[in-house]
Length: 73
Image (tube, rainbow, N blue to C red; front, top):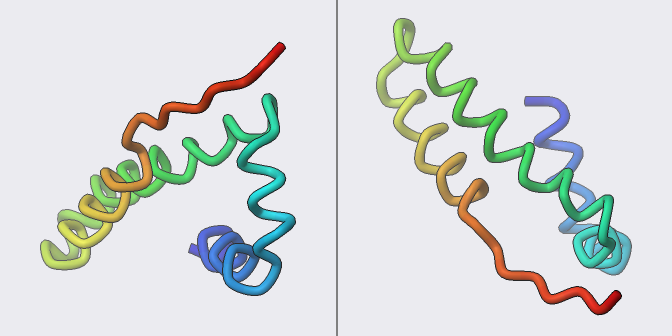
């Protein structure tokens, strides 16, 4: 959760750096790991709180959706 908060802070307050990272060929791949991690957290939260797990699942599914990025090599 701390890493998610810090990454959100980066997108809110350092948008140009976050956008540069997203468009980078290697560093841009790391963004998809956030959604996968949230899906994993949803599975772990399910026995304790179903509403929290559903929220994490929804956010994680949104973040993990496929993106179409055209890179010129």
